[in-house]
Image 1 (cartoon, rainbow, N blue to C red):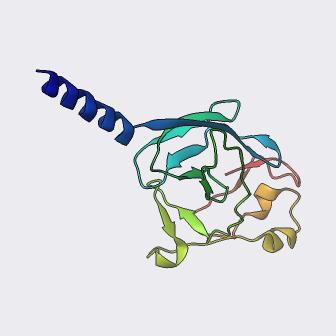
Image 2 (tube, rainbow, N blue to C red):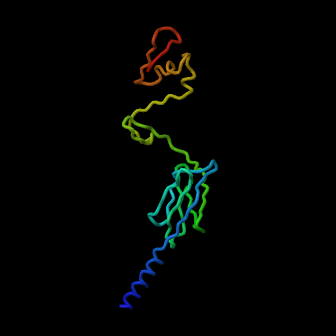
Image 3 (cartoon, rainbow, N blue to C red):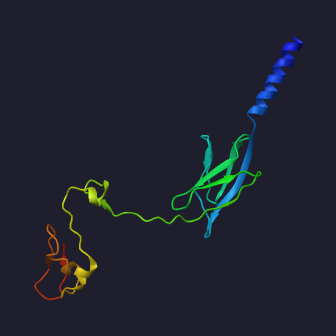
Length: 161
């Protein structure tokens, strides 16, 4: 009976050592201050959390994990090596340029080059080169399917689309 108890104690001790975890805390900021809602994840696992309204987080990390991944919309994703119980991070802005996106009548986004419909765009230069007094009046006859109606025949009177 003593041998069984001793073996159970030994296996439970080894089990605790294998599954032991460390709690890592910290604050995530950028140049402007704190960042709430930043995703914090342990690399190679499904363990994650989100920073609170003060930019603080707390996450239980397995002892065999050594990297935290910080991601936030508009910021560069950073991988930080865990060096202690406190890991503070400053995220950098991720400058990206977007292609032209078109919102269709169904609310779907698509690349303008891939649409198989007729699209007319009116640039600011074509609106500036008119003798009309208002922006709405200067849109008249610039594209098909848009009806501009003046309230009266007087010059400078209001109009609606």
